[in-house]
Image 1: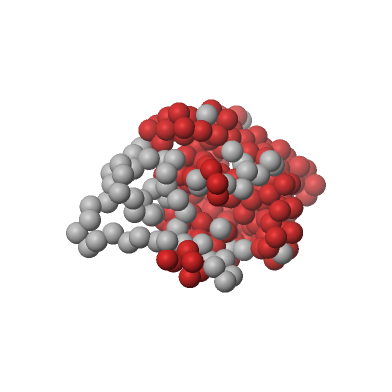
Image 2: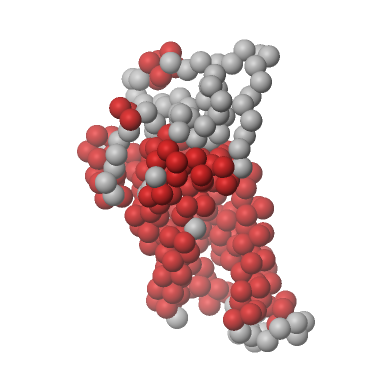
Length: 269
């Protein structure tokens, strides 16, 4: 059952990650809107990452940062459809899948680990008499599984962010990574192996929150549906519990996810 949990969780997560990758890319671009003030009307293409804390280069970057006057009005923020259309117009349809190879690797490392570990802990902590596990234990299992999974998958997460945001840089400054392997290789050679775990504390904290809220709530919703006799055990029950768990995880993680997207751009770049 332990191996099955790892394999099934990994395959499902890879399919889900690839299917939702364009939405994730648009989300990252939206969360970074207005991070660097600009004088022209806001567009997706000309936004640039905030201060990059590279060793020995912080002063140079800081000199190029322009802060708005206190009375300046922030440019209007655009919605997901407008951001998606702008990306297609300026960078092409393929840009919506920038960094998808990193997403595959990230899901292979991160989600396979967290889904498998959660399944193992659930098997061990479930009461054999009632065949149920208290919600508190589900949450603890999610925290443990999410934290370990994030630590394992952080290199792919760094590569994914760099590949997704590369299109926001001027042509002369783009890294133009060919794939996630190329991104990780270049980072390792030019910045050292430890750069692959840059910002790992942010990733681990978010993953613990997401996994605990997502997997624990999924199991809890499914058990409640079956106990109340609202639906029979089957595809309908699993889909309903998944939608509910996804909503809970999105609401619970959005505040930290928003701050993390801005902070990790400074750290990763």
